[in-house]
Image (cartoon, rainbow, N blue to C red; front, side, top):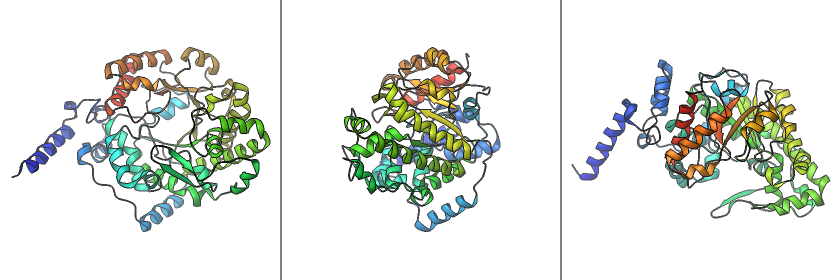
Length: 429
């Protein structure tokens, strides 16, 4: 027997041992034992045996065939309706202000480039193809859940699918990120856009990925759907690509306020339809990301940002009253969100927990807000800061998360340390 063959057999034996005896695996490393201890029913054990196989033993996921895509889409559309409550509904109860046994936790960008299994899959298929393929997107969505005892997964997609649906072509260019074929120089450029796209036709693949993920989870935990907020989406559309200061987009607000409102309202209405479709596909939690909120002054953000975030929430709640909505205005958690249709507000890392409790009282659940830069540190440092954060927020009306998303330079061990620390801190509350 050759040395490589023997090595493969030994690795498989070790992996199988860890799967059968999870207490031998570190909660911040190869395989997390916490979710295995937590799930006690036979159904949960069966699911976990499928989802939490050691990472080196994961089955190879291939692109979904055209025929299979059509089957998934048809099945999803035939099964619209209210979904049953997940077996672990901790995060949903926290968002509604109900009592929970422990602080629920998930991470923005928890499925992404810090995970080696993600990098391997995207290297083979490319980013946009993964987003548009239900089986591949579901696979990436589930990757962090295989590692950590998370209370929700968030569908793998991108906020910039809305402009694409409106007719603004997008490319992912190495070293630059998302780049549109064109930006906007004058209001007349808006005539290039379709303000009434068929959301099912243009974005149905995201709903198909949610439906596929929901089925694979067997209703174990909830699935997050999401969209970008109108201001953040507009900023990308106007400038054509990412920016550090968004000067071009900000100038548009001042120079062309009427055209800006037209574009923002159009994005908001399409986004609401998009979120409703995601909810129908199985995403019982929906988050709206306004990552560029902090580049505007408070009064400008109220007029051009928060107003349209509230419009999205109002339309979704009117159509789907049971949907749970979370706003992420990053560094702009304005008081006006307290009287909106949102159930929770996700905070940037500069927000003070005590001040936010005073501002929102019992009207909104708070989510966040560990400084993601802490995730570059050693696990013990992450643990220290995470425990301190959880103690400041307390258990009532709180969902633990980061103040922004996971980044490529972070490690799986850092994410594991964060999740484990939240669980540890919860026991003392």
